Length: 80
Image 1 (cartoon, rainbow, N blue to C red):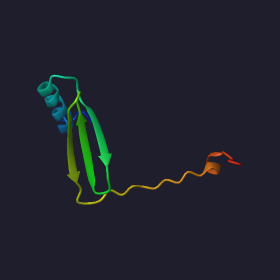
Image 2 (spheres, helix red, strand yellow):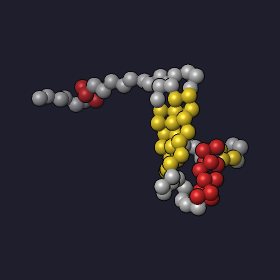
Image 3 (tube, helix red, strand yellow):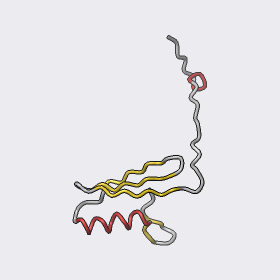
Image 4 (tube, one colour):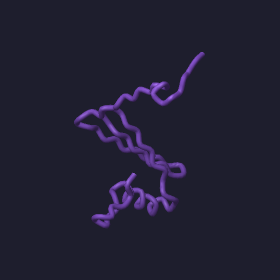
C-alpha cells in the first residue's frame, strides 16, 4: 500500500485515516486487511479490540487473471 506520494508530498487517504484513528484510540497503527471480491473491495481496520469495516462496491467487476503452472516449462519433471 502506498503511504506517501513523493510527487505531491501528500499522504494517501488510507494512511491519513489510519493516523487519525491512532490518535482517536490512543494506540498503535491498526492492522489493515483488504479483501477483494469480484464486485467489491472490503477494507478492515483492526485495533486492540475494535474492528471497523468499509466496503466499496465497484461499477466494473474485477477480472482475476488465471495462471497455469506447468512443471515441465521450468525444467521440472513430476513423476508418481
